[in-house]
Amino acid sequence: MQDQLTALLAKAAAELPALKTRPEFEAAKARYVGPHGELTALMKQMGALSKEQKPAAGKLINETKTQLATQLDAALARIADAELAAQLGPALDPTLPSPDAGPGTRHPLTLVREEMCRILRKVGFTVADGPEVETEFYCFDALSTPADHPARDEKDTFYFPASARFGNVAQKVPGEKYLLRTHTSSVQIRTMLKGEPPIRIVSPGRVYRRDTSDATHSANFHQLECLYVDKGVTVRDLKALLDHIFVSLLGQDTKTRFRPHYFGYTEPSFEVDLGAAHLPKVKKPWIEIGGCGMVDPTVFEAVGYDPEVWTGYAFGMGLERLAMLLYGIDDIRYFYQNDLRFLKQFA
Image 1: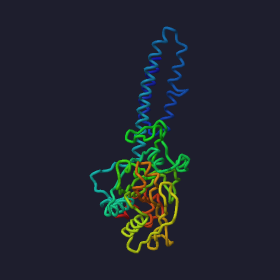
Image 2: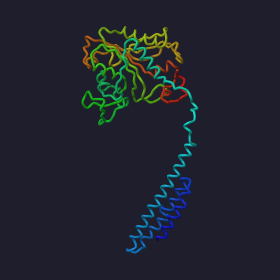
Image 3: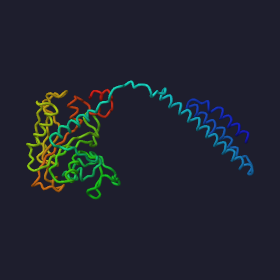
Image 4: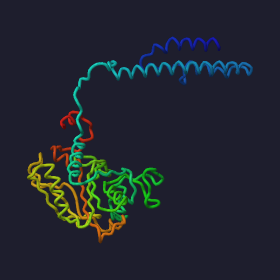
């Protein structure tokens, strides 16, 4: 049997290095160690050996099996490397100049966000930020969103498992759930809890909702929200700021208007329409651009402000929607595809 095992290893050592494809390898493997393979046939001869012969024969078979497995593994690794090399193609010379020379450009969402923040900084607003992983208190409870509100349903909001914990985001209420924020209004709550008014902030950032991706919807997108809290703040102040923003952004002929609406954390609340006659690809005189209103007294009570002393306004809008209007983009998915042909159009 020893001679047979030695001959088998020699045969494999000569045959396996010559294999070039995976089907050839699988066929060879079956011939050696398959159910009807040569090594399998030798192992079946163990039953005909005497009790004294079996230990030595078993040792030889195990050694042969180990060596044969090593040869098979080496052959398969060599074939896999050859397949990968064929997929990659010829090696690239990193010292060659790039065929796509030229400076990079900023993303259109970055351009819109920075321009909006620049306009708001000039009238006294400070940029504020907050975590994208939030708790129910900051995202819903403090904003007067009741427990049975549809926005809090798992069909609309991304929740983390109950066992999840995040060291940089403390729970305000014991046992409350962690979630991916659905709006940047949570930054307003965090800012108000840090100190007394007056407060004047703008909070741009990424938010998440369970939306099916299409030309106008995405499961993650960007918002920009503003909050102003002081004594004697009125709807007139809110309208004046929005007029200033869009005149600065789009030109002196730009108009805005309010339509009554409902939001749980502002009262009164309005939808903001933008005069769209001079916007690319917009074929109607007005288009909805965001929501706004006066901060509801219950929100002030949740953060410890006296609603008899302080008043304020808040408004928000989607940066993707604003960029689509400004640049005449008709599909929100273009923003996330990293297509250089699209991105290079923005300076």
